[in-house]
Image (cartoon, rainbow, N blue to C red):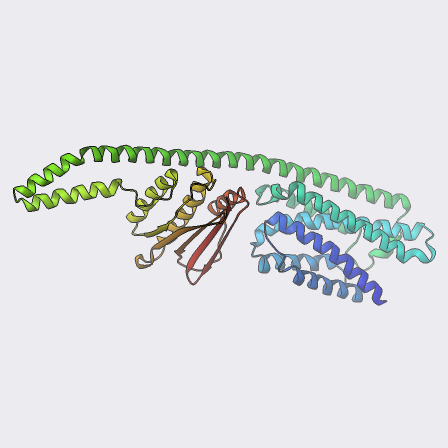
Length: 420
């Protein structure tokens, strides 16, 4: 086979793999740009091997390759890979089946003379471009709705049945599929195309139903999360108002407390004076806000969280200051700091008491606010992004910001950038 054909099939398959990788990463919510060259290289080697030795069932060789790409490089659990790979390879099967049927029928029923290879290349290119356009459309329209959706697994059965029906019906993975397709009459080829088109329509209808259900679920979840955040913010404001009223009452009675203390000292009743002073100091400590962030709602949050941390034997080093001219909503500040503190305190409780130190600080420079926090962790297992980290990312995204985190040397570090 001429080198040109090897180059063409490597380029053609590379186009499909590149578009498939972009769709796959969007659906799974991962960034696979760093590992894309390795995937393209493996796909090129597989394409050359299949073309050179006419290996059958290349489709079933490529599926494990994508599983390996997702598990080893993108760090996705294999159960979470099944649904997006089912979508991707079902569409790939439709593409391969349509290309094979149309090419075989054109070669068998049209007089192509010396233009057969060019027609084959043109058909393959047109199918690939259509496939990439379809993936792009799905990526932009339904990428977010398809992400982290339990409903995607309803596509597994329908997608698997369609893949088996198309591949077995057209013998795409057999060594003699080309002569088999070439024997199709024109009406048989048209019928095969219509059946695959109908199957594709059914598959897209099911996918749209899943996406619609997922959008509604996401909206309900977002509404519940917003309600919870509002309740939390209201609780912090009420706590701040209550503490302010208690501090005002304490100050109002301070003169009388000092009179009592002075009388005890005048009578040389030093033990009673010491006990009274200690109780007075304890009452003052309970009302004093040790953190002044420049935001009253955030002050209330830190007072509550720091009090909770003290009860658990966690030392909190807080150096948080929100400049008054920085426009960050109170609710977003509460979302970011409450999730950081909750996650950090939960991690601190899993380590020995001597390591229970939580540090959080902010840096404000040129319209940017950086929130940084560190805390010890019990082990260095990969970080699983839960609801708390997702809420932090969502809040940061409202200010064209981002959140990054890592575990190194037994310390969890998170950094949140906000453009204020």
